[in-house]
Length: 361
Image 1 (cartoon, rainbow, N blue to C red):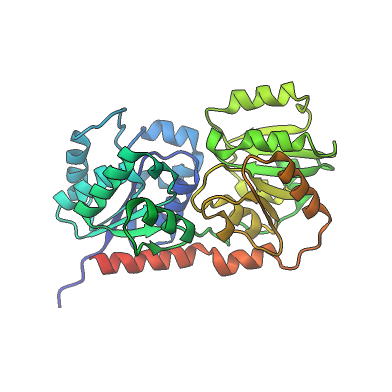
Image 2: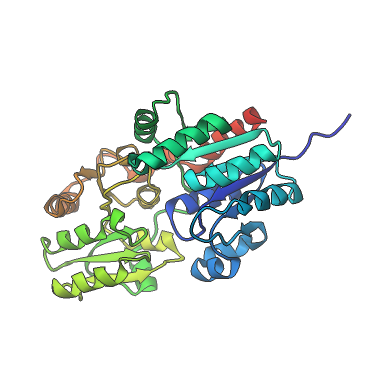
């Protein structure tokens, strides 16, 4: 009897730098029963490994195409050749750029299994993006997934295309676990006796760290803020902190390799985003038994335990400050980690995507 052909999946992302989509893709690679390679349209191996050291153990499974700004048709040809060289049997794209290049290369290569995941919907407010996305979905006919019910609803509304599958994001609950707060703070050189609020994410306007800094000004001096991440707004945020006289209470940590320790060091986690899909960081924090204050945008309401976390409107620093104070005095009606174990386990996410791979092939 002829042996079944091994499945080799290509995960296609725009870039490989610290972020929710990229973290999810790494977890899908690590936990899938299929061999998986990650193709990054932008960047080089050397730059990515230097900027994000967690990639180093998987360097031999990463492919970089160093895409430059603008449309590059040759990238599609390059992907076709690479798919053939690596014997790719399934392609999974994340967001519109990877769908354009990876999806077309998949179909030109004769690969039957094509999955596309939408991680947010706010970019579809742009008419040109909306038209391109609709054309690509109609022509390429991928198995189409949204990572949250809210994202599925918004995407369907924008594109007038119903019946989007929903596969919720998950995190590695064996990696993100409760730990000793004092040990974690000492490791990250954070104040040992402060009431510590933490925020993790790209330093970009959409993530709203500026709102969280304004919220800190409404809290007593015992409250400090630890910010993990890097991005284009770093200098502006540091200037904002200095102007507000909060320099001694705000700790910029840059890219943190040991994220479990970061969450374990906190009293409250806060995600003040202006727009979101289904973020991973609240799941990671709650898996470490840390309650969350999170803006009620995108699929955020789907990733927090209602008994131990609080949803607030975006761009409302006073609401964030009040929620942080509330969590400081309230006793939890449910363990945040228990919520993640039931609703945010990466193994459930991987199982659902692996089933789609089999369906698409």
